[in-house]
Length: 428
Image (cartoon, rainbow, N blue to C red):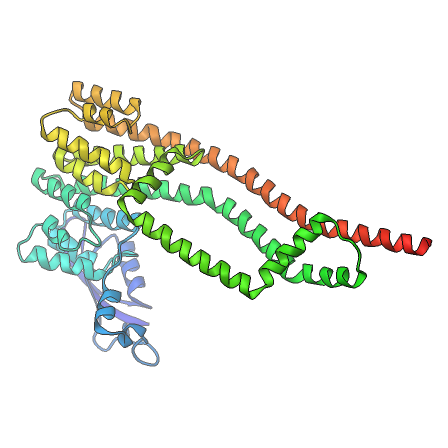
């Protein structure tokens, strides 16, 4: 057991302190939470064993890295959407309880969120204590806090509604995390089916087929065409020269493809193909349109100017075709035009989006119109994912069944040929 001293704030705002006998820091925080308190400071008691571990300090391979690599390894990674949502929700809850910002950030240093180390909160607390605004402090950590995050926090500070803005940000990230999870879930089963089929084919070609080939070679009979094709494939994959040639071709092709994809022409070509691809293209479009509408709506709803909101949305959208259309829209809005007109000229966004944004502009509620659009596209995305999965699964199963069936048919035909040859020989 270890001892921890703590200071915590009651819901009434009163500061209390105490001593806890628990296993570790996580258990101490859990105990404070059970007491209905918000932690302000948590430290190992003098003489305690909170940080002690058998065998001394933990072994860390990063200390053997060169300084530049060690610094990169210690630098916080870009958090996942759900991790960012949890961090934002925790901060919003602390502020809602009545804590001053500096006290809330100090508590966040003890409430380490998965994917966002406590050093992030410590730096935020240090910057805010020195007199910086929270948005400026977050802008110093672009790996963790995006331009969208920083601008929304800045708008919340200016309007005096920081708690509400943080809560909406958390909801925003949770929605997108949910969409990502749906994409992943939709691809898990097809990927499993494909992997299973490849394992079966690999096992048959490398283990079972050579045994049959030795039998066929000893019998010296004319083999069916399908069996000869199978033998040729097996010989091709077992010849080191052919394998080396294939490896060189694969590496060269990968390099050419990656260089093409990195170019402006290649990126735009591939992104346009994603939008127009059969079956998958509809799902991609629904996801991108929903992301555009949800991001722009969230920014404008929280007081971010239209031009800044469009610029941030352009950075968020991962498709270069849509990026170009948003950039053209932003330039047109700078000239005093509405959003709907330049979006329509791009011929990328659907007519439904153009019409609803136009209605939002006429009624003075563009964020509301965009929010309704986002809800619509997210609902259609759920249906599109199910349709895509229902189409891909049978196609993959049929493809694998045909491949395995060809392997079995080739072997069985050869066996029948051998049996017929033996029967004919005995009859003579």
